[in-house]
Length: 293
Picture (tube, rainbow, N blue to C red):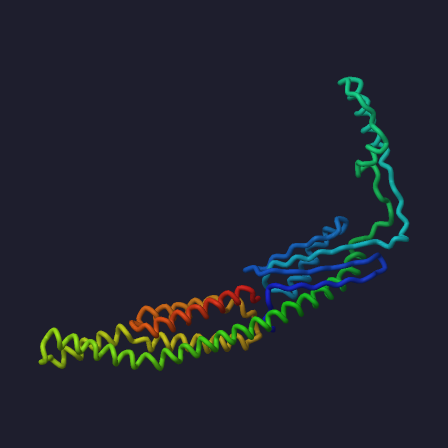
């Protein structure tokens, strides 16, 4: 599957036999998939079916889907009066006046403000019929939504590849700089030993100290591991068999660990600055990856 962003938007609308339907889908990043549906009250029970349509095309993200429905204007509507309920309201109002001395009269206008007293009795649309017309509109909105996410995801992938290339470039500079740094540090160490012990110095002692220094300053393994992580990340970016976002977290953590170690073992201003650059770029990719499915 292509690299998808977790933010996107899609909409679709259609005039159907039962009325005008408009569907909007939008999402933001989330570690897991969360779907919220806003449906007309009379078909709220269709929520699970709608969520299933969404989950079939989205792996991660906080998705909000809203449905707006308008019936045709020429659809005949009949108002139904709930007489028993209206009679109870009137009865209670009269009892309040008689027994508690409450003043005022209950008017027709006040009664009509109670939604349960007057309701519409037009032809009710069954859930199956509504879903039959809603499904294709929803699927069309999801297609547009998917295209939006894919477009932003492709842009993000290009940016991450650029940053990864720069990480590789900086790592190459570090690898070229490291040997010269070791020679300088060895010469400085030898001068210090000679200054402390005099001109006559045991070669074995110098070799031992150089070995200890080599172990402290050697960053070859860290550079090798970081380079292997770069290769792995590039392979993951090219692999469309599964979502990229979840795979990147651990790899970025390991890359940051190697960059930290290179910086701590540097003992060299130039390499230390380059290690900071590595960590900054790794953090940039991490921030981008948070919005990748």
